[in-house]
Image 1: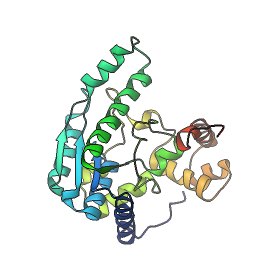
Image 2: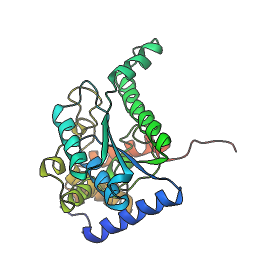
Image 3: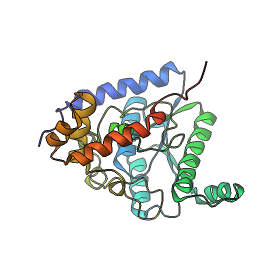
Image 4: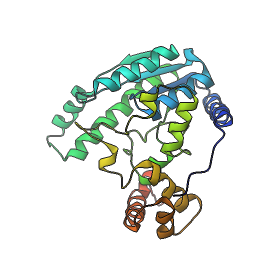
Length: 258
C-alpha cells in the first residue's frame, strides 16, 4: 500500500501558527474561540492556537450533549487545563430540544443531529462576537473532501488551520505536539447521537482512505488506480466520488444569479 507524503511537523507547526496569527491579526481580532470535543482535531487546533496567540487569547468551549461520552468531556477539560486557557462547559441538549419542539416536527435523526451541530456553532459565535474573537475551525481535509461535516454547524467558522491535513496527518501532528496518546489515537466520532462513530459513515478506515483521497484529489489519479494504491476495492473509490459530488455545495459559496 502507498503512503501519504512525509511532513516535517516542526516546520508545519510553525507554518500553521504563523497562519493563525496572521488571520487573527488581519481581522483585528483579539483572539480565537475553539470548540473542544475531546477528539484529536480540536485538540490539535487548540494547541496550535495557544502556540500562535498565547493562552490568554484563546477560549475553549466544551459543548456536550446528553450523549457525549464522559471520557470526551474529561479529555477536553484536561487539554484546556494543560494549556491554562479560559474554558467553559455549556450543555446543549436542552437548547437543541427547544428548537426541535419549536419546529413542531420531530424530524429525521440526521436533521436532529444537525441541530446540535448548529447550536454549537451559534454558541461559539456568541462568545466570539462578545469577545472580539474569531472562531477556529477543526475540520480536516479528509472530512472536507467527503463533505463529512454539518453545513453551518462545524462548517461554520472563520478560519481552518488544519483543513489541508488528512486525518492521519493530524494524528501525527498531534503526537508531535505532545498531545496524550489516548486523544491522538481516539476513534473519530462527531458524537451527534448515542454511539455515533465516523466508521459507520465513511467508506473505509482513515489510514487507507487518506491514501485514496491523496491520489484522487491531490495527484489527480483515476479512482480505480487510487483505490489500488490504497489497498481498497474500487467500490470504495466510487463511494468517495459520490460523496464528494453530493456535498460540493458544502465547500462552495451559495449559488446565486448575481
